[in-house]
Amino acid sequence: MIDRVINSALQFLLIFSAISLVCSQSMAYTPILTTNGNEVRWVLDEVPQDQPNIIEGSVEFFINRFGTPDIADNGDGTGGEFDILRQAFRAWEAVPTSLIDFNYLQLTDENVVTGTDRTNLIIFDDANGSGLFPLGTGVIALTLLTFEDEAFDGVFDGRIVDADMIFNGQDFVFSAGMDPAKMNLGSVATHEAGHVCGLDHGFHQKTNEEDLRGCVKSLYPGQTSAH
Image (cartoon, rainbow, N blue to C red; front, top):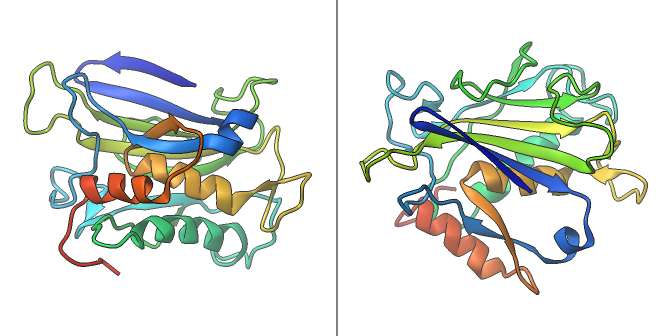
């Protein structure tokens, strides 16, 4: 389910991960496109003055220091859910010949996502403070992307300027393992990180690993692996 709201030259794209047999069995990815048909992507060579959430070629993310009470951690931003989230981003960095790169995930006290502050934030929303998880929606997590959607086909068309990842801690319990009564955080986070890269949902009979890798290579081409 996708909800689009256009504000000025920026487009806000909410990408939801919902409980569905279709989603769980046949979810794949396709590139997100602007109105002009250009791929939505991070411009990794931007300087901090123009793009403060790109630091030396890496997309900078922050995570609320309280994380989730569902998974035990070390209390200092390591272990538990913090390491799981970092591994989710590393999975996308590991795509051969792709230059997409993320920072280590810094801790923050911020717990409000705006989509416009150019601070990429990850939070667990345990009381629907965001207003994005009305009861009964079945939404496990969502990624909010804000990108340039120019009226003309300009050089910045498709440039991502902000990304936030929100997990529904009100309706779901997350785990580090495969407890059938809980949501595996690693799987959900890795899926959402794909949206952060600029990928949308595509529905096929079978998820094609090579197609997925090809999308990321196309968005962030490089001659050699970044890792």
